[in-house]
Length: 136
Image 1 (cartoon, one colour):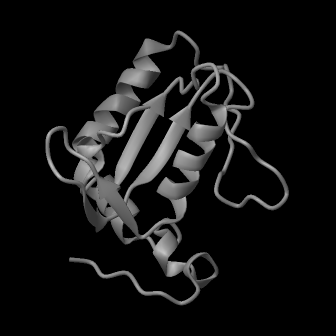
Image 2 (tube, rainbow, N blue to C red):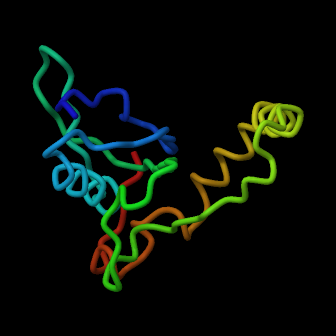
């Protein structure tokens, strides 16, 4: 993980495949994910440019075949963990259909994530103690 994160500015959805923290980086990854989940602003750092704050709208989906990539306990409400069926493994026709559906409906899907109150953590007062998001 490095500090240059301008790719995430103005994103509302990021999928990370096979997230695996490097040796000695597990705690740093947990801190990064916590910040990405709870903060209203993110410090954007572009290589060779001064850092600046920007509104953070991003939602993350982490995909892995491994257990324990994120720290989850009874006090942590940041994650929803799903174990998926292996029924469709190697069923390329099924997954091509899913891919086509997403491509053909990407505007509706992204609009859902942007507008759905349950996905945007700023709308949950317990996360932000009543602070309102400034959507500019």
